[in-house]
Image (cartoon, rainbow, N blue to C red; front, side, top):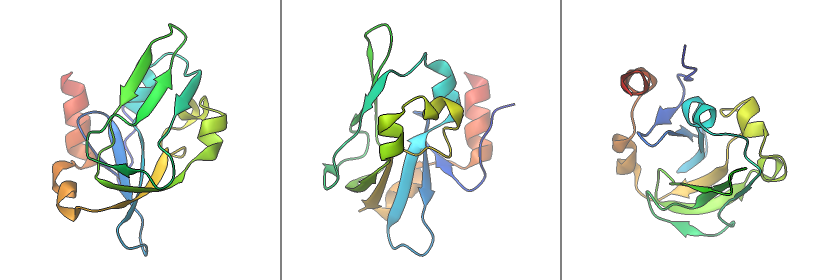
Length: 131
């Protein structure tokens, strides 16, 4: 059974978004369980820098894999990077331990309407099951 927390929203590129309650226009972003299961060991990753301006679907996460291939991962919202998860930066294996606990970045989003492009857990699970 696909793990898919109910408090998150998802995109079809297997990223999740959590609106942070009590923090105006702030969200956390991470990879879904489905995406991390499809990946081999992650040797290292590159995250955007605090202060970077990002556009929806910018491939601003780069995962270095044992095959030497770099997996480019898009961000699901437009905005500014406020914080990166240094724990994951230092230990990328944590993504395989729990991809929902170990988020990648916290950001201030610019376009609330972009949340309409995200889907609820039930629809995300149906999408993954159709693959």
